[in-house]
Length: 277
Image (cartoon, rainbow, N blue to C red; front, top):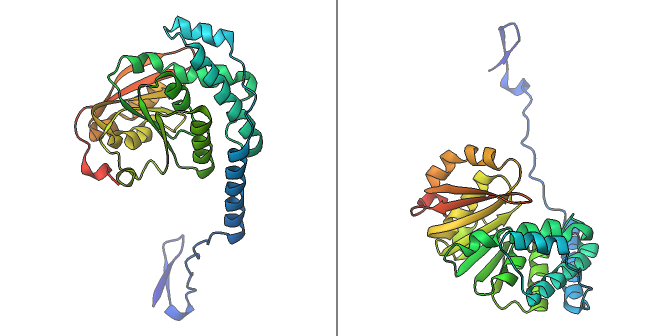
């Protein structure tokens, strides 16, 4: 027998056979037509990136160049030319494949200035290996790799079309110091670079606490993450204290920039085994 409970507290026993059994919802299967469409789109992107003509560069913004100088960052002409070409390729590809929501008109302000605000804190560190976690269309990793050619960079990106674009950028710009890794950040053991990196950079990759949990397993002891955060940076850092303690990491600085806040986190001790997946 089974019991039904009514709002007044009374129960009513009924035969088990009379109770309607609710079948668990069937697991939704991937739509084969959608998978085929995505695969066709990937093939289209590969073909387009292979044969795309040299895109028109997006000319430098004098105000951004001046703002970087005020931060102590003076770019070489060769670096400026590569940045112009990168933005040209980004927005030419974006017209067909939706890589960024930022407009050409604000590209130097929103992409270059934001990304290169990391140069000053990066230059203060001993760094030979670095990773852009969740690189997307290559930000901040590509601008930083252009300006710090002495560092070996890994661009970690889970989305296939974006990883394909990043590989094309590396080829088009001749960036010998950049490797693109098409993988999920969560799969740190599979990705083969745990507890080895000097620096991780990140921009627009979710709240700080979860981001730190993704980043810390990749860093060597004493390694640093430089995370570009918005107006809620201090609140996110406060909310992440318990998680950082568990990860054996701590925030050592928060640097205000013209566009955002850079949160500087250091890995203090070996990461607990439960964070290696």
